[in-house]
Length: 154
Length: 440
Ligand SMILES: Cc1cc2nc3c(=O)[nH]c(=O)nc-3n(C[C@H](O)[C@H](O)[C@H](O)COP(=O)(O)O)c2cc1C
Ligand code: SF4
Ligand code: FES
Image (cartoon, rainbow over all chains, first blue to last red; front, side, top):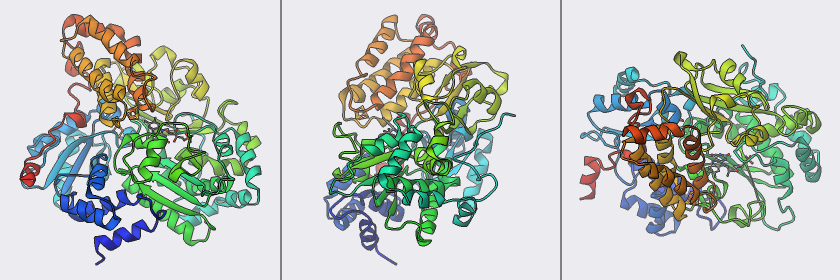
């Protein structure tokens, strides 16, 4: 298995020398490995990119998809922007909240699932859009929430 | 039922155009050969003649942008495709990448030849995982087939930030920085990516370029309307019977799109408002929807073509709730660089909350107007304006609804509006029990 360090060197080679363009792909690689970006992971990425950990931290805080806290093994992101909201997104959020027993923004106590309300996912014509581990489930309704959760067990 | 005019999406209903062989079977990549047989000057002339206007929002002619590139610069020239598509209401670029990725790649190769570039970056929003996979596979297949010549195409994934769709923020992000807009000038054609001359275009703009080569600029310029030739993929969402993407000639009446293609208002409701360019533009009232869908016609009635994305709103919806949810989005996405935008959007949210919950006075409506006025023209990029334009239009056209909130001390719609209590990311419980433990 290639180490994170080696993978990052491979990504770095795709961008002009001396640029920092590889920072986003590098942080993504670390997050794919650990699920989130711990302080140790930020230091590891910084080391591989020859930048400071503070620089990596400043980038990680800017982007919504980079997590500076642990998230569940499964992330469920429900779009609540206007088009989805007009088509019942709030009911979908509430159905997830009651099925999971947590509020949006929280993780189940066993660390299994993180539920979040998110901004437009670019699927507004297929409302409500729910991303389960970044895979889109479109046309979600309150009634289809148990089905979406049921698929996770299998 | 009214017919679409599929040009960008041509062939995708009949064939799997994600496959190189299938795209070639319908004449794909012949435009590259045609383009490469021309000098870059001649190609830029051709693109200028086509008068293709940018599909990302501002409508600037793509060929003119190419003519501004300093091709004599000793630095490399870059072509950057804006695939960040994060405007609420917009989902057209996604369909192009998922269904006709080779048309986008062909457009990249032609545009790269025009500006004498060998380095192309496609910046795709991080959430588009499935689209990234299709696009990356298509890039790989075309590369292996030797179509690229000396051009390199790199697909670069974002990580969740609406502001990175703004072109200079995108460049910053691509350079590995926080995605905060740059002051202009210098403009990207002079000093863009890595301080080198850079052409930036939207996915649909670039995917239209092979169509121009195939038809010839003269013929292309005769399609659509004279001021805006060609087709656009219109994303229709909200309270219509058949939401989705519809590719139509520019100049098609908005009424035809909403009532014929998209099947009219859902559940037998009445039309209340149309936000025609994605959530960042001024809304139209029902008496304004006979407008032709092109840049100049929409501009003439005080709104924008924007991202060709229509959000259709029915009569159940409370406009204060709509304004509040919209403003929370812009507050959340403000990059924080300019005070009027960073603080102003927050202030707007607070005022709108007080109007919605019935604690506002008439003076607060004036205050909301004035906070908006103090953002417009006083910020570095258009995001600040995008926060204000829609709200100012709701406040102007549906003022009686705002006044009713104040006079009745609460929302006349209450829970009959689908936006009642709608959560935004900024409302949620940010700290999970798990995270708290991890910090110890
Ligand atoms: C806040 C903000 C967000 C934007 N988001 C996008 C976007 O997601 N996609 C896009 O193509 N253009 C977006 N734009 C417009 C770009 O800045 C730029 O005008 C466009 O990419 C140019 O391409 P075009 O000429 O082909 O339209 C945005 C602009 C602003 C101010
Ligand atoms: S207007 Fe807003 S988003 Fe744009 S640069 Fe200023 S603070 Fe950032
Ligand atoms: S509003 Fe939900 S995907 Fe766009």
